[in-house]
Length: 314
Image (cartoon, one colour):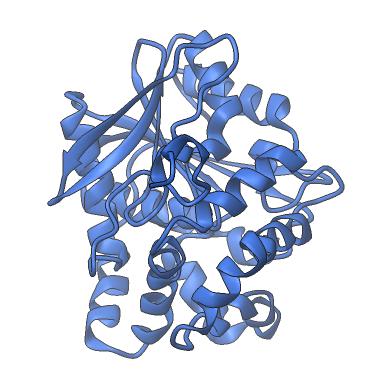
């Protein structure tokens, strides 16, 4: 039997420490599944949601910065990723958002500031609309509001082309094989291609590659995107996007890299029309799809200053 500590496909690989900091790794139950979280600090809860093709590790810089700023920073692995359960179903955004709000309850908190990147940003938008009492503030990175995303995918040829990988995910089994081939080489290529001139460090990219190779992770990672496309004309999708007309009524920070090749600035800008609360748009010049990793100091400063602002402006 392979020692889990040396097995690149074992889920324990994602329970990583941060030098000089006592990160708490544990599992919490929510919405019928088990979720792995990494936690640091004490204070008001800030829950961090990763995107594709990553896991909680993408927030390693922000965990430290938030904890030092007086927050309880928690990064969770989404359903099917990292150390969380890989269930056979449940990858539609409404259910994934209930995972998020269920984790807030399981952590014993009345609410949280949600910070979501990419798919995690899509779920953060969704959770704020579906369970507004559990979301104190909302920060979204590199992702338009769900209704803006849908409109761009259907009407903007450039955004459709930028999301060609999502269309490729609609094929059965092939995407899973591609993501895990050659020890996750495609994952590394996607992260570097989607970054600006300062991509995440090589060791972080290798961590994402190894995490994608944990059995069933690739399949679970693409299932949300299969739902997003296949539901565009289905009754469940129409009903979901109708529910997303409900405005967000908490202060919202929208962060975006000017060089993001995945989510075009034009697609993301304008999401404030769905926010009936203070809304702040911040464009990071010269950064790509991963601003929180490409320039973690500038990103963390922007986020923490906004969290501490008692009356964030529009």
